[in-house]
Image (tube, helix red, strand yellow):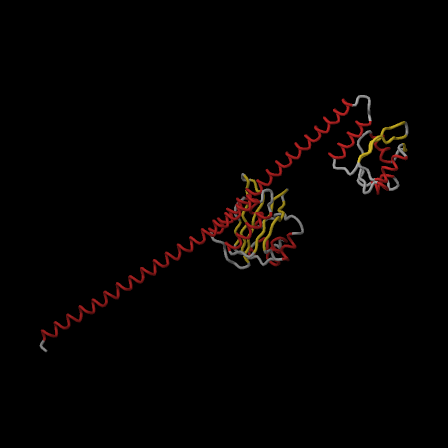
Length: 346
């Protein structure tokens, strides 16, 4: 083989190696590109799953709000359960803020020792605690390690109970705000040092807004019910008054039908077991009407319609005002109404 042939073969080998190297480079780039696409797709799937999970949880809580008007515990419990699951927290609770104190109204998975401390009574927000931060700036309190708080070093009872009885290390407390007024907080806790992500914090903030909606709905519903009850009671009283006036106008000169009508309506409207009406005659009293009284008491009243002044009647005469006795069996055990009238309250 001459020199010319060797040069030609060498050139062919170099070209072949370049082609092989080029193919390998293209294959590596293609694999890298595929791996990147797979990573992007996996990340998108994860984000989509998280978003769907959060939307489902939000929808679940809103559904409970609409299906349980006036009931806060189901709403709070569902909200806490979803927050714990999605945010990977160990336990959580919700406090309402009233008269400068925080009162727990709901909890999920709280360790017994910590819950026993919380149940002792409302919590006063001492300086340096997460609750005090919330009260001061009405912003989220996110504490990475509770053991590093000055409040823990100074042995604040609430913080110590949370760490030593509840095992709290990382906590997230979110305020419940109604037009910038603090009405409560929701707290979730981890028993290891692991901060919550921004998305997790945002989720709990959304839940807090839903809790405020539930509280406000309950308040408005209770006000509406109270107004309805007041109107119903007023209407019932007006109707009873009208009926008594009709009896008076239809029975001129006859007192007995009037007394019986008055007593019947008074007993029903005041939700009393029975009623009695007396007229004063000098130093004595005469029973002139009786409604729904126990048989023994009614029979005694027929035999002895005239009787002297009892302690209750004496007090009424002296004050000339309504007299109310919580338990006649205690106040006047010897009185006929106490002996024969059942568990009488006057």
